[in-house]
Length: 467
Image 1 (cartoon, rainbow, N blue to C red):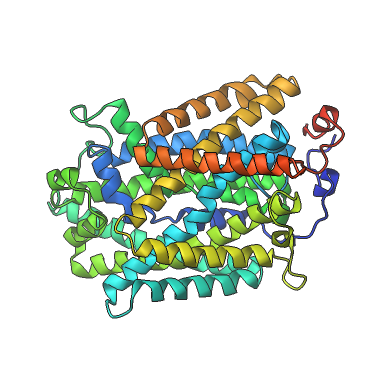
Image 2: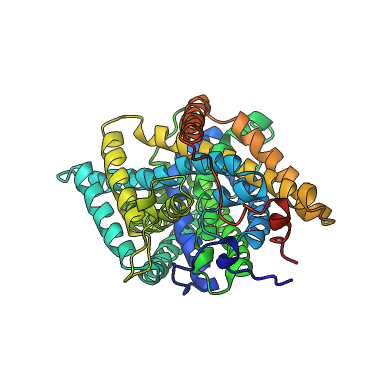
């Protein structure tokens, strides 16, 4: 049996252009996660973790490495765009896939909105004469034009921007370490990793539920499996590499920043969105504050949103070609081989939601809460789909890969969800309820969720398991 499968085996045509290599995928994943992502949420993670942001990021990375392992297993079996929507739908059942896709939509659709909003607010702070909504429109327009030009152009630009972000990060780390050696900040300490006086499991997992926002996006690599030159094996490898690289970068930068916080007690009692930039100012002065602020705005507003728009458009495309969303979203541009209508819909949603949230004081907090809870629930179902598809349905003898590892990964994420912000839990349940209503409507219309290539029953699924 061949280990590499073509999408034609599942009843689909190869419409998207294959031209994305391993390095491209890793850069894409890093761009989605943003190597300097902690710049924007450092203050919140620091306060939520009781001054142990390094531990929060370390546990978050470990949890998502288990998730990446489950992604690797499912993308082998089903090398299709659509990510957890396809994996849960084919690994468990189509209705479960629809609900999982619905939950991950909460993440993918709102991620660009959050990123545009954060970047626009940062630019407004630097240039107060230009309103937030104007910056938002500029960012959305630029990214939409780039993504409509094709995946190769997106990949090339993400490489350039990743180099820029890494250069800014290296600058901060060098100046920050030098400042610590000169006696600034609180000096070298293990307290950002572990502080016995502040540690508790609820505190840790509450902090992890915030820190994972920086990691969200590694899973977006799986959306490009139909455009990958090496197929599912290449995608799985890229996810692991990107997650590990990002995790190391996140841990190092928050450790240095935690040691440079000018008022640790004050930050613990009152989280600040500018905490990282305040630490940068302690290390190198106001000029370094401005450099890190501008880098955050540029990275979140252009690079991260660019690849986020790519990911959600592929999810909409995958669900639409299965008739679980309006069919116009499945239309692919003949010239550029991209789901043009899906990209335009994401553009309009980002504008509408972004401008609306810019009028709310709690806009960033509200969007962050919704994004995290949607992703965590979908990841739990992903782990369950590995167990059902491989261990229960196909009798796999790979106990670690197909049973133990997914159970551990799901268990960690369940604790994260339980200890998440109450607002996030409530809004997540509301979104889940809306998905149930949509599912009931589909059944009432005689269009229950169905995936191509599954009409032959369980035996067809067994034949889809790679060696």
